[in-house]
Structure formats: structure tokens, C-alpha cells
Amino acid sequence: MFSLTHLFGAITLAGVAAATPAMCQGSITTQNLPNYIRACSSGDGVTCNILAQFLANEAEIRAMGLRYDLKIALNIAESGCDLGQPQSCLLAGRILGGALTSPEVTPNRQEANSYLTRACDAGLEDACTVLANGS
Image 1: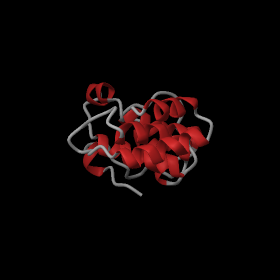
Image 2: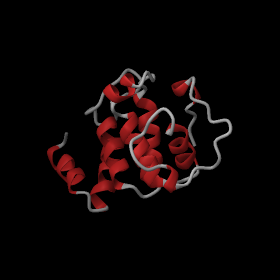
Image 3: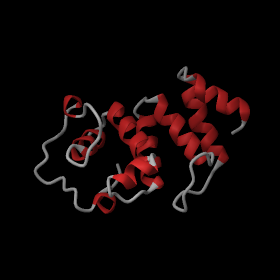
Image 4: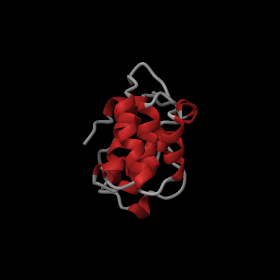
């Protein structure tokens, strides 16, 4: 699905059992982050959405001493979208549309609109608004 090894460095997944949604409650911390990674990697769309939203927040990532990489947030948002999470589709659309920027991601309006349309079709009004405004 995706590799997060270079992002998390000191955070190891060794010894972390397959995470369940119950293990991924509350705020993400460096201690429970491996649970979120495992659950998302196992196909838990809700957890992928939570993880993508977290990873897209540059200030929070840097405050935790982690390396910010919007490309990884995008990859996880795309996975969450593919797993039926409209909020992840919206995030992927916003990143690809240039609302969040970093050197790792090249804006692509066509791809952005595709994700935004998926979110809008799923009933997410914010995505419909972004599509209507073209931003």
C-alpha cells in the first residue's frame, strides 16, 4: 500500500500486533502512531482517513518531531478514499488542487477534480463547494 519507514524513523512497527479500530482511538501520539499505521495498512478506511488528516497537518507533525511529507499524507488520503472515506477523497482533492503545498507534490487539477467528485457524489457538501468554486 505505502511505506512509512523513512517518515517515522525512530518509531518502530516491530512487535506491534495487527491493530484494530479499538486500538486507534483518541489523539495520535508517537506511542500509538504504529497502531494507526498498521490498521490503515490492513485496509481500515476510517483509520486511513484519521491518519491522512493528521499527516497533512504540518504544524502538528513538526511539533511531534516527525518529518513532514505531504506526499505520504496524499498517498494515505488516496487509500482512504479508495476504502470509501469521502473526507479522504476531499483531502486528496485539496492536496492535488494546490490548497496544501509542498515540493513533494505537483498539483494536478484533473486528478483533484476526480477525487473531489467522488467526495461530492458521496454527499460531502464541502467537496461540492470546492468543485463549484474551482479551488
